[in-house]
Every structure is written in C-alpha cells, then in structure tokens.
Amino acid sequence: MKKIYCLLTVLLVLVFSLSALRLANAGDEPSDDIKNAAKEGVNELLKDKRNGGLHRLGFNSQSEIDDADLGAGFQIYTIRPEKLLNETTSLDLHSLLVPTNQWQFMVVSGIKSYALLTVDLFDGKWSPVSIGSSDLAKELSDILKAWPASSGYKYRLIRVYQANSNFIELSQTGKVLGIIPLASFLAATSDVATNAFDPIGLRDPKEVLPSLRPIIKRNLEKNR
Image 1: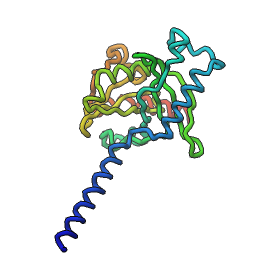
Image 2: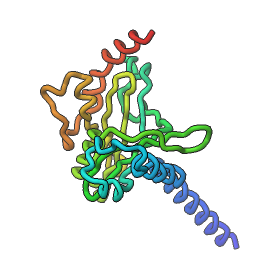
Image 3: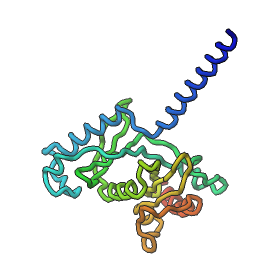
Image 4: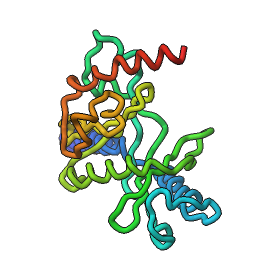
C-alpha cells in the first residue's frame, strides 16, 4: 500500500510539472481573446470599404484586400530606460525586458505580408487599434523566412519607445542566439549607412544596446 501511495505521489508531481512547463512555454502565444480581436481588426480596419485608401499599404487590388488574413502575432516587449541608462546594470537581455499589453499581427494575403495590425488591452478588453507599418511587416516576414519557426526558432519583438527603435530577439531551445536590429534601430543609431537591415544579421545585445543610451538621454531631456 505504501508503494502505491509513493507511486501516485510521483505521478501527481510529474503531471503538475508537465502542466507548469506547458504554461511556461505558452507565454508568448496570444490567447483566443487576442486572436479574436485581431480578426475583428482585419474586418473592421482593412476590409471595411468605408475606410478606403488602404491601397497605400501595398495592396494591388481589392481581391488582395478581400483575401487578407492574420499571420504571425508578436507581443511587444520593451526596456525601461532607467535600466538601460544605468551603466552598472547587466546588459543581459532577459533581465531588461518588460512585456507590454500590445500585440502586433502580420496581415498577409497570398504569400506576401502587407501590414501590421495592433491589438491593445483597454478596460480589460482586447481591441484592435490600428493598422499600418508595411515596412516593418516586410522586415518581420523576411526574418520568419530566414529563421523558420518549424526549426524551433522563437522571436520577441522589442521596442525601445524613447529611441523609436525596434529589434528582434532570436532564440532556439531556450537559448538566446542574438538580436536582429530592424531598420528603425539602424536609423536611430546612425548605423544604417554602413549596415542595412539584414534578416540573418545576428548581433550581440551587449555590443549593440549601449548605442541606444545617448539617444534615450537626449530624448528624455527634450521631453522634460
């Protein structure tokens, strides 16, 4: 009887451990409520003909707009400026990141990504708020093709608001491989002249993040 009790205890511990692991791994996956809000946004912000003018996003025909659907979703992470400005703080990326309530979904039609649809949380309800950023959508699409999720790659979209800069953290099997600066990051750091956006251009966060410090300082001082 004692052996059976011990076996049941071990099984229960294993079940709870596996459940916790599944929850931990699902951290960057959008919930059904978020996905439903994004689908609502595609219909309201893109397919509603009363909105008009959405050909600026690069759609060539109304049929492409009618066939538009959701692609990959990215929760937006950010870095608190005081942490990045503190030069005694470790530049370990995971210790710096803070999740936000915003998600951005690629809007695709056929094999092409045209735009990003933003979903945010208001009064406990997820709602679509805007659609645009066709250049950023293309960059994200290029990264997904270069580093396919089917090979175990995971991505985090990181936005440093005080520097108007975006970059992607790339990881695999729980290990951060590096970051990929997006065009906004390269433009903000005046790195765009020598380094164009490269979807396979992995860089070390500890070497790249310090270049944001003077930009953040300058912009914070402007807004005082």
